[in-house]
Image 1 (tube, rainbow over the protein chains, first blue to last red):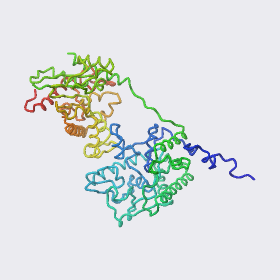
Image 2 (image 1 turned 60 degrees about the vertical axis):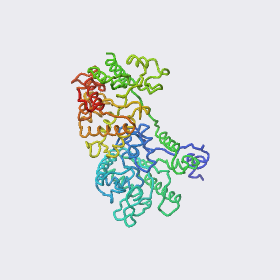
Image 3 (image 1 turned 180 degrees about the vertical axis):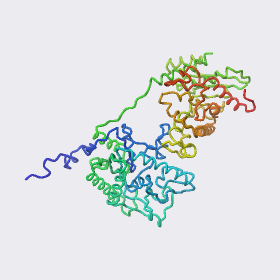
Image 4 (image 1 turned 135 degrees about the horizontal axis):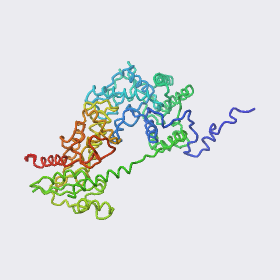
Length: 345
Length: 262
């Protein structure tokens, strides 16, 4: 009598797929469900690991939407410190699916977050992205003015995208008890005031994460029928937990929930692909080398390996840039002429 | 007698032509210049000189410097005022920034990005930092160092089909807040220059349009540009003696505020 495991590919078996695989060999972890091409308009969002994905896709010549662009004259570090060039709009890290769904609802005017402006030492911060204006702004009105502009850019970016790449990062968040508003950071951490009567800790479960993400996808598809989704789970462990559990246990719960949601969406929806960056980085085959010394941050080698897996699977390579040397020479020639006319007198 | 030394790239030509065209009693001025590519290879050297080192540079660069100045290096000794011209500027960078981005409270023209005032100030400060000359010019005890920027691109670029001018064309199409934006950058650079013992004299206001470009009548001739005709790239960077005169007047007023303009 034959076994249902007979005839399966070698990647279905731990021994051949993992035990016998050379260390750091990523193997065949990823087979794309649909191609990702350089002509697609791609929007990126998610937890901090998503920054790596966006940056590498852009470097490789993919058409990453930048709805709030800065010209190249602005230094990278300064731009990044203010939330530019990190994602497709200046929303900063979107750690939870609840935050993502809330952002899109707010951008459509269907939701108004509670306590949208946080204050600290006479300066004012956007509660939904408090880290993106280091030093804050002069007034609450200014914060709201910038937020209104930002939301128009978010809506435009999301609704014109062909592919939405989202990295699910956390299940833990802080919410406004009465209104349900979710915040990306705990009130009082960067700005604002933590008030136990107003704010509460929330650790989303599978159903809640699934519902918020499905709701977001459904509403976006109403106005953008062609959009497809590529989900990843951040391999970065929690930096802290408010769950009362050990941070490793809390991390395992969080990642398991997020991974389960991705699995369910992938199974139910042909417009969803899943990229296993979490599996690649955390694989026992890598002996932890894709993490920095703090055992939390993903190393540049880890990011490179994840992106190599992605690019190889989609059969694309980085594009070199060119320069107009001849035009430079022409301009220089004119500089010489200008001087000679004056100095030869 | 005030002893001046002007050092710069090709943008020094407009100043020299203007200076030479009018007697300047009370001033002893020397000019030392090189095209940008050669100028970038020049530096402060031992013996209190500036220019190309005696060895290690190509004969071509040396020939260019000597053809312009009769020498490849200039002595800084006994000069009371050293005026550095055109070798540094962020005018185009600021123009690109203002063309691509709005700044809250300063310019809101429907750009995709809306910068906060603090971020705009930080960007100006960063651009100003990059625009400073090498540290050997900072806090000199032997001479006052004056910085004069490269002029803003001439408004004749608005007729060009060359893509590099698109940001300037965009800015000119809606110049709201452009000049205050340039002034903010000039203020940042002036503050930084002062902090490093130098003086920054921005481009004279009367030479600029509302969009911050240099007005058409200040363009140098011979750059492949014909008024009223579209052109591809052309030279919209170099200005004429009238522009040089305006800059010289600014300099002389700074040197001796009691003297009326000539």
